[in-house]
Image (cartoon, rainbow, N blue to C red):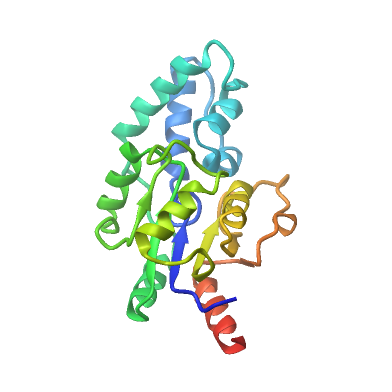
Length: 224
């Protein structure tokens, strides 16, 4: 494996802990309908799966259900109003990004989250201008697990796929990276549920915390 030049991150559950705000929105929808709040332990594993996962959890609705579209619009309106209320970067991630920059490495974001929410959130956190690339769920006609967003990010960062490293907390992240010819790590600190089997996803490694990324890069460098 060539030395890493660019590190690409998933957003929700990998770079930024958006579960508190997403869970707040889901519970607000439930309150409006006379339903009790769900505990964080319930909604946190679904936060990486967007509105589909959250509305399935909160209301038992799939995307094809007649009530899904209207409920999704209401959810997103609530979310836009509280997008940055309580969504910090994960502990230690700030230091990791600074270290990557100090080493002269690029970093960027590839997410299925629409640009309408991604860019304001990253700007609020002071990350948007620092990223070498930001590819959102509606940047292209395809999103993860399709490899097109990964390859687009490589082009924007001027890095070949084999010299990029993707970090994500969902199986679709690893599928997309592998299809693009890009090595990938599973962020075990993210939004994994008890049904997830990250060891079976085909990633080249797993990290327990953000600083594990630097340890992994250092270990690979000594092996090259």
